[in-house]
Image (cartoon, rainbow, N blue to C red; front, side, top):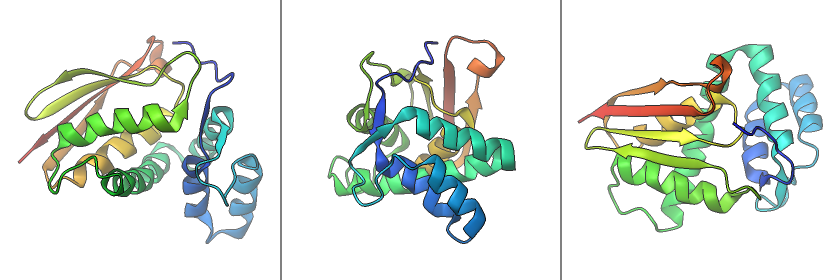
Amino acid sequence: MDSSTDGVTLYSAFITGIVDQYKHDAPLYATLRDLARRADASDPLKPAPMADYNALCDYLERRFGAPELARAGGVVGAHAYVQMTLDGKLGRSPGPVQVLTELKRVADVMIQDPKGRGWTILESGASSLRLRRTQSFNCMLQEGLLVSLVERTGVRNIQVKHAPCTRQGAEFCEYTVSWTG
């Protein structure tokens, strides 16, 4: 995978949404705000460097481990779901496939990459969907984001299989999300 972040931006809200989860811990919050200094908390739609987002995620994973980053990704997913519903692109009771398809569309709008990288939907079925991430994001955060989005549709037994993975030498990360009910 081309992991270059040159010229790649995302809405400041992605970064501040993670940082704000740690307001209760003043020293940590100060460190995270410093890492996120180019994200504009007063303008959530203002572009911020993808490199800052990745540095923030990497810092949190090193300090607290993958489960904490997946939890933070879940909060990001909850916020993303709210935004998707406010945009009016989801119906009253969207299913997992509709929500994950909307994730791809929203990401294409909110993340600007001169090389056109992002999410690709590889397969879609009645109880699963397989996506490929072709852009430099933290894997663990993405797992939490995907689970959180699908949870909001009311299905059960949500599983995310994350393989192949760039951390094990693969060219791209792929996520198979499955559910019942």
